[in-house]
Image (cartoon, rainbow, N blue to C red; front, side, top):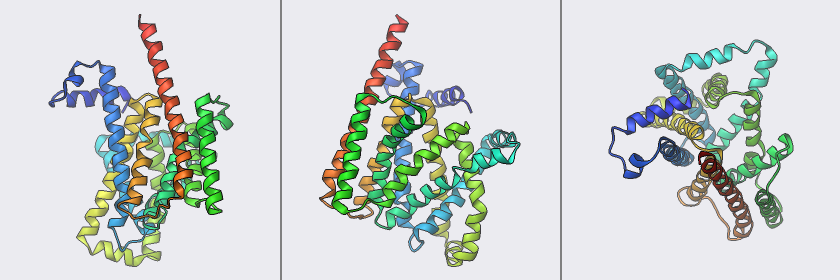
Length: 332
């Protein structure tokens, strides 16, 4: 479904509902922006819920929850694409890949994707929630660095400040602990590679997700039958676990879908700034609901990282204002 079609369908639906005056009085572009912001917020809240989800599925381990999530997510995604009539379009895209080299290139990012989803479900129940959330805070900053190194993108003064303060924060944490969490490094060091590879491949987010989940599904089933048969028996004999896992799959697909829709509706800068909601929620959930440790000594190093993020947000705001001024000048 194209962005214009999606936007039109959402506007048609919302026009039948009682909406605030600002919605009715705004232009189509402003309504699209508001809808994009709403979807981005919903997506980030859903990802926050998913982060804490594994804690409610004890005695399943973090790895077992990850396996079940991949299967539930695959079933929910295939069901949604089939029901909406979009599955054929994604299959046609994959059929256009004619050589083994093209398929190998397509599957190259899949292990990164799977490892990130495993860590997302494993970390909260293994006292790595705070460190993983920090990796997501650093992720946009690393995207800036990768863009500079791989694509020759020029950094503004604010971006240089952002990267510099983040580097100081990471360095301070290394000095304080004589190490740095592998979970933090894995998120911010490898997740950018996944998005960059998918960008170079020209593969849409949903198509890439469908490939990743379909490739992994047989391995997930093999793990449950041969490595964790107790988990299979536990889930199969419990209506509670079955409903929880169905919910896990639906929430996962809904979170991904709303995130993709928001990315299509919002300007890149706005979407980038909205993405900071997720790690903020993960960080709060890790400390409060999940009870992961947070030492007072972390405040200095993490404060430097958050200062870097503030500079990156300031850069996005500055670019957004510049773009808006150019649009106003062009319309005069």
